[in-house]
Length: 486
Image (cartoon, rainbow, N blue to C red; front, side, top):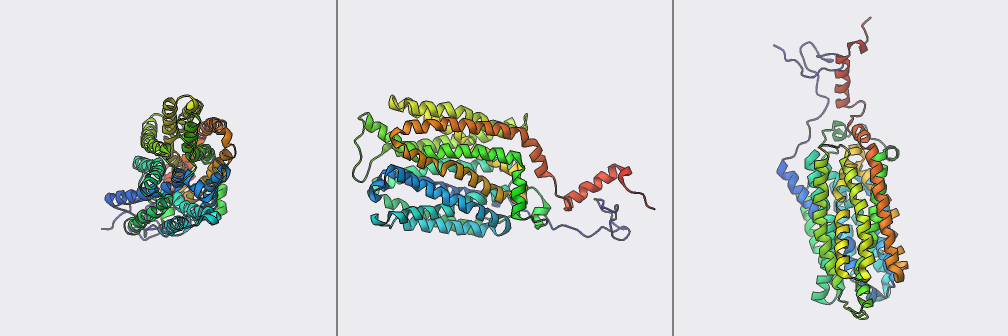
């Protein structure tokens, strides 16, 4: 007795095979990974993300000592972060292209080696060659671009739906946590050793550990595997990079959310680099602190701001992800609405924090903490927006373009522009409140296009196994659409 097929083919139940026989399978067995292995891989990626963002802000934690050692002015000190970000944004499209077409695991490993080696070499540069230190920070930014671009797409292929939202929330917790620990590590190592350079010599030990864990415990899943997109998993229908960019340019949810991320990057770039020194100078003005003219500089605000960033980051990311997950049950546009509300609420908090710094530090820190918490609510949610509205085949390119746009228009210039006006730094910071409100408006516009773009991203491309099945079901449910035999 012959076996019948469960799914009809284009030519009927038996497809193109003989009577009573099923057609040969057109797709490979779906890629599968045990749940515990996916969780271990996510833990490793989160650990490396922590180290990644510690590298972003480790200079800010010892900025006064770096300036004294290399004799760098305030305006040129802002260039340290600008060089880092510019190299990162120029490298991001390259790594996005490689991540969509070649081994993501190999690309991540290369990036870790690059930023680790550059960070270590920067600690041995003499004061007479300060330009080499700027160069080393640029190379660190290039290595960091690989991880920021590719790692979220790996997580997107290991988990689905609510699982992916929760894992991305945990992953993005380590952005503010890593940033805060960068300040804390720099301040702690400086106090223990009296030499800021040892901060850059401790990090490579942690990064080599992360590289070994990546090579041994993290798989390289097929693109789109978690969404069961067989086209992506089999590598069919590969488009060119220019076609991917054109598609993303017409994806309005991606465009507006990228502009919202750009506003966030502008504000966080300026605040995270200059706030510790701003508070230090405010204490000097009020006579609560002596100016620092010799090494080491004891800046307790770096430690306080670092701890504040860690705590508000953890609470904010969890709060934003959970609010988005629960709100999505009643409103499909939950993600951009949560981002918009949090940014619009953060604007007055940051404004009051900076305005009150000259009168009362306690109240200023309270509003600063609220502003950081509200900003942190967005880290995981914006990643979920991107993964839900972009086709799996070009998510790496989408991450790269979002990083590039966010940095080139955001934190690439904001530390430098703020440093140019350091004598009126408080007034420079106040424009951040206006920029973050613009970011909230961009996420409101994202909400208008979200559902349409999500539907398009979930729709199988023509010619794939999934689309063939959908076409067959449509023909069977509408017999008149089937041409009659002559």
